[in-house]
Image (cartoon, rainbow, N blue to C red; front, side, top):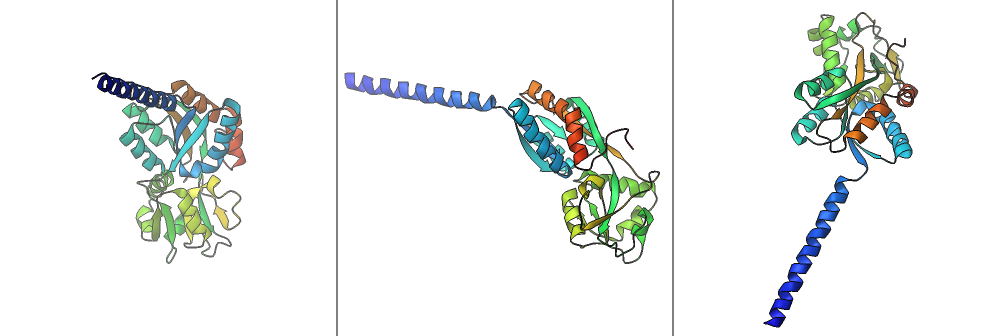
Length: 260
C-alpha cells in the first residue's frame, strides 16, 4: 500500500511539473519579441529592410505575411490574430477601421500606378487608351486580391475604357509581383502596376499615366486591435511612418506624400 501511494505521489508530482513546464513555454511564447505584420506583396523590398532596421534598433523581430492586400484582409478577418497591417491602399485600412480591427493608423508614402511594358515597348503603348488597341495583350492584378487590381479597375472605369480593356486582358494575377514577373518575361504587351515595383527593372519600360486620368493612392499602416502587444505594434507603426521609414521607402522608388 505504501509503495502504491508512493507511485501515485510520483505521478501527481510528475504531472504537476509537466503542466508547469507547458505553462512556462506557453507564457514564454506569448511574451516573445516578435510582431506578425500583414503586408501587401508589392511592399516587400522596403518592408524587409525596415524590419531588419527595426529589429537592430529595438530588438523586436518582424514576421511578415506577404500577400495581396485583400488576401491579407481576409486572413485578418478569419484569424483575428496578428499585430500590424500595411496594405497597398487606404481602402483596406478604412475597411479595418469600420470593422474595429484597427484604431491607430498612420499614412506612409504614395502609391502611383503606371503602365509597364516589356523593354523597347514593342506594342508602342503611349497612353492608357492604347490598352484598348487591337491585338494588345494586357495583364492586370486581380481586383479581388490585389490593391493594384482594384485601383486599375476603378481607373479604367473612370476613363470609360474598362470594358474595352477587359477584352484585351490575357491574365489577372493575385499579387502585383506576379504581374511584374509576367511583363518582365514579355508574356504581355502592357500591365498596370505601381511605379515602385518596376523602379530599376532593366527589362521593363515605364509609360506614365496622365495625372488627371490616374488614381494615385496612399499607403497606410495600422496596429490591429486584437494584438496582444499593443505598444510594440504602435512602435512599429510609428517607425514605418517615421523619417527613417520614409527614407527607406524612397530608396526603393516610392514618393513621399506632397512631394512631386
